[in-house]
Amino acid sequence: MRSGVPSAPAVRSLGSGQEPLDARFSELLNASVVNTAEGKQVRGLMFRAGFGEGKSHLLTCFEHNALDCGFAVSRVVISKETPLQVPGKLLAAAVESLRVPNRVGRGLEEVGASLQQRFESLEFRELAQYLAREDGLNSRFAATLHLYEKEAARNEELGDRILRFWSGDKLNVADLKRDLRELGDAVGFRLEPVRARELALQTMTFLPRLIRAAGFKGLVLLIDEVELIGRYTRLGRAQSYAELARWMGAIPEDSRPGLITVAAVTSDYDRGVLLEKQDLDQIPAFMAGRDPGLAEASEEGMRLIQVASLLEQPSRGLLDKTYSQLKSLHGDAYRWTPPDVTWPEAGAATPMRKYVRAWISAWDVRRLYPDQRLDRDGYIFDTIETGYTEEPDLEPDGSDETA
Image 1 (cartoon, rainbow, N blue to C red):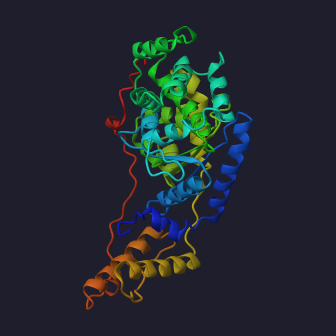
Image 2 (image 1 turned 90 degrees about the horizontal axis):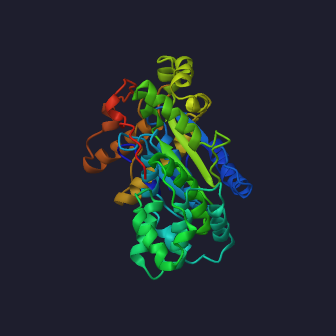
Image 3 (image 1 turned 30 degrees about the vertical axis):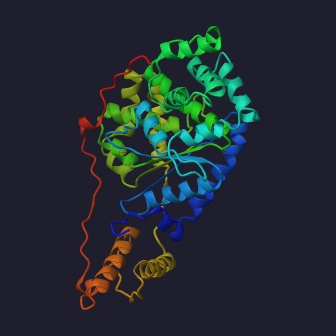
């Protein structure tokens, strides 16, 4: 917490301080159960705030809430390694960070273990029936689910290969056909070709259904640092806006029942990118000429950013409560009685992170050097500003091979 990044236990202790958004997220969790039963995806939640004002903290609170309510959770941070506009990389990051309730591990291993206990459940039968439909997903999913049901318990290597495929790894079709032949089921699955990008999108449709079949309520996808797309080229930004709309459930014809997406972006993105880079005016026409299929989705993604909920500034009451809690935590951690310290100079929009770092730093100094008074001599912290200068190196090459 000294650097302004609270641990999971600290988040549980401090709470979010954003009661309206806490309530909205709880409503999403409840609505998702109903919508999923109707074959619909609940529309996601997007919020915005400045650096250090609590975006990541709030996402962590949502993560705990979702796990407590029986949902699996994936936490994705947009970066050079995880560009928003590449479904395969977003999928890989989501599965790598996947957590399920009351389990320690990450990834699909815990989901697979739970699934093996539920082959007779209604949810598993519904998943198998959905995959068997002609308008369902690529037959690789039906084939691998069939193999997992029949063989995973006694063939650990095969089960691991299937879990890796469901996690976004490549699948050796020749090996899959051989495994099906050994069961006498090769004729029932066509295993038609599919592009890697499309397969990743289908996997993100499959995963929430798989997670429900494993006994959980659905999948919550938390996307942090969406503002990085402001440093992409215009094409990269346009594609990212379209993908944002997709994951948020804002494209009715591209629904993923069981998926709830929450995304966080900086509060100045609207002004710094949508207006100053003229994305609102230029991207619709730009995409209409380049990729008409994504033009409307790009517009919807920009609109989601514009209407994102603004985090509330901490009230005096919340600051007093947080100060008391941190003072108590510091005392418990180091077995001493922290004295009261002077607060940092505050302005109209002083982020919570500045207060937290100041208080903890002051107590650290007083504990180690009782005669020193950092809080009396003045706090000095670097000011971090978000930059939106285009950096083409942040974007992938856009290749899309056949899976």
